[in-house]
Image (cartoon, rainbow, N blue to C red):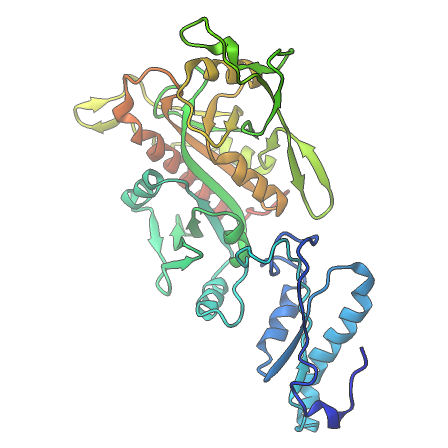
Amino acid sequence: MAVAGPRRMMWAVEMAVIVMGLLAMASPTMQLSMKNPLRGAIQKINDIKLPVYAIIVTATSSEKAFNESVLQLSLEGKSSLARYKMWSFKVAVVVLGLLAMAEQSMQLSVRHTLHGVIRKINEEGPYLGLVLVSDTNEQALQASNVFVPGTYAPTVALAGRTFHVGKINGTNVNAAATVQLLIDVFPIEGIVHFGSAGAVNDTLFIGDVVVPSQVAFTGSWQWKKFESKKGQLRFGDYNNPTGGENLLGSIDFQPTSLYTPEQKQTIFWLPINSSWFVTATQLQNVEMQQCLDTDRCLPRSPEIVYGVRTSTADMYIQNAAYREYIYAKFKASTVDEESAAVALVALSNEVPFIVFRGVSNTAGGSTAYKSYSYLGSVNALNAAVAFIGAVGSSGASRANY
């Protein structure tokens, strides 16, 4: 593309080009994340207040030279404006990767009504992202009084999600229920995820907190014929009462595709960040709540259990036979519906993360202490708060990732 002379540049609309329509590109977000090395340059471009922008959407490395040349023109043109006041045109190149045009933008455009609010919030960062997954978890957070809301914008609503901005133990925290949007919009140095879970391992009891070293998504199935082979789950084997024929056949559990900036890998067990896990194991004097009130207490004091495995699937398990199979097959200690998703997003963005899950019930098992399930959320929050204090005071949120 040739750049016209000064006379022709007075026609601001002549070169207003928007090239869009790329639906399958390399980047999974529609704008650059807070930690992308190009974000500063893009922000500087966006700060230039001129009438017309030509937005050129590109994705191939072969166009790198062109992108850099036009980017240089865009940045240098600000000083040229003083000499050529008739220039009312500026070319700004925004390198985007679009997976689908219908997806919600992962960054706020400069025209978004909350762009200025988010920018001011981010000036107070970076933050730790506290990811919670249910109303019960949010109630536990609010009741604890450990979260001190920010003074400028304590809550921000984006894409139907509410982000709570403030501090825990003196550390900047952004509490939310969605991970990718949290990472893309705010300067997040790590993800602390807490919630409740169902126990699979019979040694766990309501109120205990597990800090897994591995999580896996066990809801991705490959259907097989009715005959089962070693390692497969044959539904007919779990009829209750016994007898009869279950025509669902059998399944294999499929691994997950993990995409990072460097590579794509197929993996089943997603690893927790090692340095953060070590920090968690060194927590001391974490308050574990045993009683709902003075008259209702669990038979033993809850404990924190480290190094177990957590199974995640998009279903609520209330089947004792399936619970036993999950434990026998994967040696998982708890089941939930979110941990693997949080892990996958964090790993894909190369952001450290850790999981605290409080046992609220025995999956498909005894309901004797069902009324105490809330203590699972309370104790998981207490452990997460202690961890945030330890990581925040050490300043090692992104160390040794």
